[in-house]
Amino acid sequence: MKLDIRYFAWLRERVGTASEQVETEAATVAELIAELRTRDEGYAYAFSDTGSIRAAIDQDLVEMDASLQGAREVAFFPPMTGG
Image (cartoon, rainbow, N blue to C red):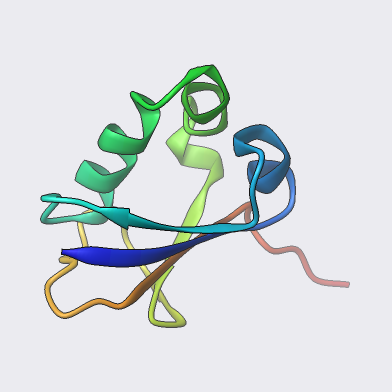
């Protein structure tokens, strides 16, 4: 499946792009991250600590085990803070 991937804040800086379209066989967000990690050092560094990353599928916050079935967009960003 083709997915639009968006990266925010330090994730964008580490992977070197704000967005891209990828072809993937991943079934979950965690599997997608595992695929992205293998792309190069920037991706490996960006996704080295998944505990400090949040994900959204089609603009809805999800857990890492969320299914990608029917998804069009996945966004990755650091945890949000308030105040």
